Amino acid sequence: MILSVASGKGGTGKTTVAVNLAISLALAGNPVLFLDCDVEEPNAHIFLKPSVEEERKVFVKVPAVDESKCDFCGECSKFCAFNAMFVVRPSEKMRGKVLIFNELCHGCGGCMLVCPRNAISERNREVGIVKRGRATVPVAEGVSDANIEIVFGELRLGEPSPVPVVRAVKDALNALKSSSIVVIDAPPGTSCPVVHSVFGSDYCILVSEPTPFGRHDLNLMVDVLRDLKIPFGVVLNRSGVVSTEKSQIHEYCEREDIEILLEIPHERRIAELYAKGIPFVLEMNEWQPKFTEMFEKICERLRHS
Ligand code: SF4
Ligand code: SF4
Image (cartoon, rainbow, N blue to C red; front, top):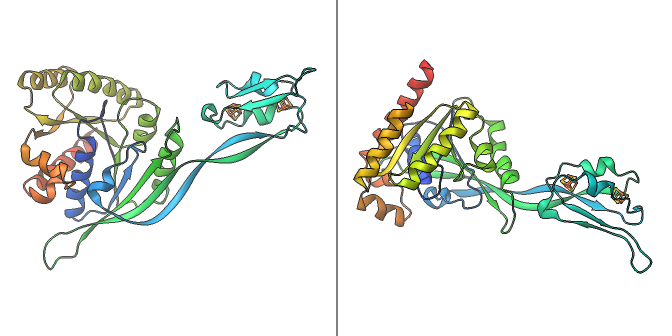
């Protein structure tokens, strides 16, 4: 079972929901794999505090030109749809030059194929890192601890596209045990990295908050999931913070026939625990069954869909 947790915008409590859900499922005895695909700002590990067992660099392929073979014909730059190559033709005053803008390159390899002089090869460029570790969740005295396997990526500062690092995090799914429950913490927004993160999920939990921005961005994410044909439901975080807007979210979900799976109230205790980096299900035990009940509700919906 692959469950992704997404939201149309940042700051809605997406990671809070993903982490508390993963812990509740692990405490209920399930093997859990947590993938933090929010590689521009991974923070699930701050709450799960895993011991990191493995690190792997993530590379993308970019072109390298051997100018001793190049005749500056310009075929490569003509081909590149991303304007990542520019050829300066030689003149009486200047030698020719092929300029490569690595940040714009999508690594398609097309320039290498069209070069008539075989002057282009590929080289690796590091864009981030993926870490794998294990988080231990204490259960009770005399009972062995629950474990959560976590994989999280970190995009190098200044890199324009998180997608290669998101893909590298999701590679962990290749070795997935069939009994495992996967919780994916998707990046905020509705762009490419979000689509790559939620793609292939059995179900997506959309976290929203009762504000006008929350409702607007929820709407955008609903459109994305409907296009991808991924079933989804909503978790309303900070419920009750603005009573009129709360009803707007309810009205929207009712109109669009979207199930509200869970409401997390706007409570000082939850905010305090968040500020200390403590998942609130660990201190407010009444919330563990609420998250596992939500999971069972999702399984039930999937069985009937
Ligand atoms: S296509 Fe090849 S030969 Fe032509 S400019 Fe580009 S690198 Fe040089
Ligand atoms: S690999 Fe593709 S995107 Fe990159 S420079 Fe070559 S043609 Fe452009």
